[in-house]
Image 1 (tube, rainbow, N blue to C red):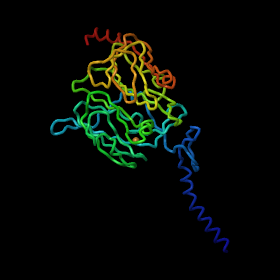
Image 2: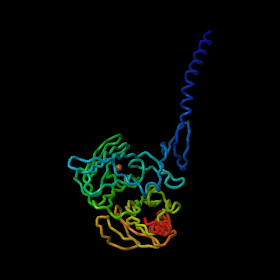
Image 3: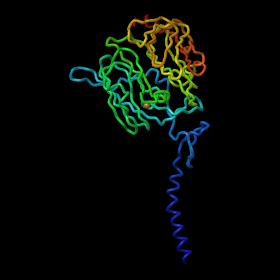
Length: 344
Ligand SMILES: [Cu+2]
């Protein structure tokens, strides 16, 4: 009798536990192994590298994407641009096939969004730190000391801070986290581009942003990969389509850590170069500029002849490790002739 009662109790317990077990079994966890494989398992994960899903980043989309914020106008007539920027530090991204890297990001990508305003606009950044470490946003440009994002660390797990300042000066500037150790916060990807347009707009152009960056995936304070916009060799495999006789304007910012210099060489052409973009008259006409970290500028050029043209670091080590791309220049003459015939 006793045995029968015990069996019933044990039996009932097993039935009670079963649904819980199956639910747990259904819940697959994704993680990255030490050899770099992404694995899903319902089992216990012992010593994983990362247990979060990886990031989708499209350099094609990033290239020509500008964030103008939520726009409103103050009583005095000043344009106000509101942005929400969220910092995280637990995402992983496949930087190169099979190479996974823990990125720290503003709004989920490296680089963060390209923030764009006109000189004199009020820029208001609603910054939320959802990371596990302290982070800030430090903008290059002119603003009050308390808006500099250096001394007011924003706490992890949902800390907030509102950065508010007038956009200026005209040009292209970086923004990045400024929490110590700075090197660590930058190499993981907490940076982006801030463009301040002049009140009288620059001439129309096919505009793009290139952030020159590198990744130290084995933590030896030397970069293993280099790129324009994060993914090594991306624009070589996916050439940037442009047209002949069309003005191209590139906002370029060097964020490479560890190496003292980077550079930008354009094939089959020369470009007008505006260091920091602060002056509306170009300082150089060249096919080669050298940039230290956070050094940046605007380049402008037009291609006369159609075809494929490389652009890359002329520091060969960097280009061979990913910082190389290609323009595919399409012939615009047919289109132009058509427009002339149609009188448009
Ligand atoms: Cu940080």
